[in-house]
Amino acid sequence: MKADGRWEGVYSFEDSPFIMEILTELRDKNTDSISFRKGLVKLGRYMGYELTKTMDTEEVEIETPLEKTLGTVVKDRRNVVIITVLRAAIPLMEGLIKVLEHARVGIVSASRGKAPNFEIEMNYIKIPNITPEDTVVVADPMIATGSTLIKVLKEVGKYGKPKRLIVLGVLAAPEGISRIKEEFPDVEIFVTKIDRELNDNGYILPGLGDAGDRAFGAP
Ligand code: URA
Image (tube, rainbow, N blue to C red; front, side, top):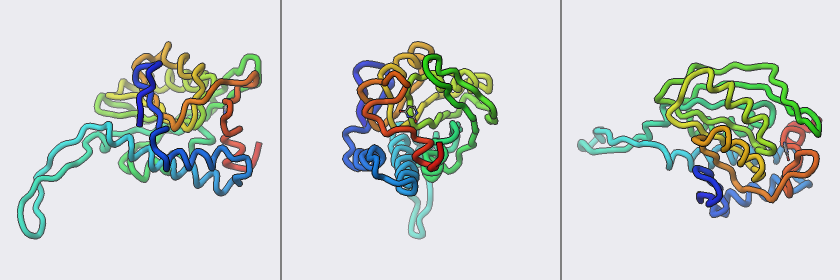
């Protein structure tokens, strides 16, 4: 995991060959829906694992069958809320929750309209109450214009102020990150890689196409 010098609290996983290999498979246009979904689940699991390295831990006293000893628990793993942004975050969440298995899960349906306005529609919102102990992980694979996430983050804010607010995705465009950080300076962003730019239709380049269509085989 490496910090990006352009923004505070923005991290990518370009230093992880295994995560880069999964990303490469996701980018490949010849990867079918089954492998694409499996790739997203795998990424969720490994990114979730990397996330635990940034969480607060605590020493606990336990007894092995032979003697008393000290162990470690990831304290913050017990207080996680995962917000799943439909559709493409479903497989990502499936992987994340394998590591963050205590998580309460919120669901938000947010879809982006067409260029030039990319108006966001939110039709379904179910978010648990958020406490000051919580780490909120908003899972959305593609951070493109940032408009969807800004709308989702504003909605999440209505349910309480967490200890940490994290956006976790597969790819991001610099434009989207800048917009999110302008509105939410404290939000942390974790992505496998920050790509070059957005095209005129709001797609990330080189990107991987439409993550929802590719995961579910339906436009
Ligand atoms: N959403 C996607 O699925 N892909 C992009 O490139 C941008 C937004």
